[in-house]
Image (cartoon, rainbow, N blue to C red):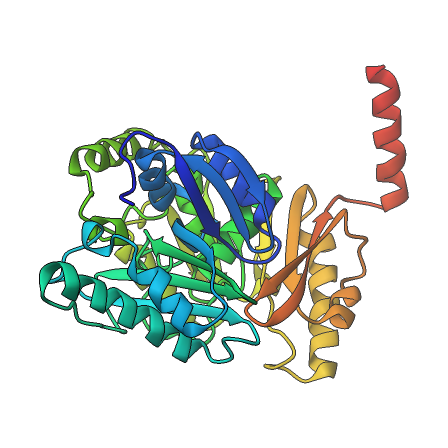
Length: 398
């Protein structure tokens, strides 16, 4: 039941809604085989080196799971007996701690906590039978995390090779209200197609997550380059030689920025927090930060990309939101021709006040909020003139 060092095995990589295709593309780039998308997850096959690479490199992943067993159990007692037969003592040490995360959708197992207890007992009793000693449970900071998924009578048990959620990059400090999830921020950037070719602007930057993720993408830095602890390191088959090889490859892949990255906010405390995050990531030379109202901000170049995450309904009154989004649309037209602007919002009515026709609309989830992520190609003059010019250009190319 050990994760084989060379043979391929299945991995399940968790993600957020709407990011499955992005994640699948990332996994293929790393060499994953038999990649298939599901709802909030992507499966693949690969060896242990691929698993290490996925934990280090995947920007849109939350966790990398290594399935251990799937079976039918029609009662909690049957779950206990079948789980107890698995070779747990070959996976981790009895002196290590473990915890169980359960996801239960079943009439037979109505409470996830009860199902977790049954699996916990099975693991502890297995160790006791083989080593005459039981490992301890630590729900807060375990050495090993085990995922239990139950759908009706189908049981799936997996090892969490990541340990903590991969959205935790290592640069974020406490504070800053409701910060944008790092995985969502990375996905928002990747969905634009930007990889550092042009200048990047993030007004209304909040705690700076978009700018920090953009810097890592432009520099081709692994999103986990600041972290040195993963769940797979606590497993008995951890291969330090392979891991060091993966880390060195990551360092060698870094490139110099060919663009400028700007973050700005009208709120001084948010600017200070962004600066603290920038320093924590050692990105002082990669990101320029400014305390500035978006409606006073002017780009330094004639083209680039701009991503806005404006305040949403829970923070502002409806009439204030309508005015804000109208002003955003006006400012786009006045100050940002030549740019590709993207706006994420959970207020579908307010975002229409931007007054521009989106070239793309993508549905994403920002926590529990259903959002639209809209792209606007900005240009001087009337849209009809731009369309006519584009058509004329195509005829000349033909």
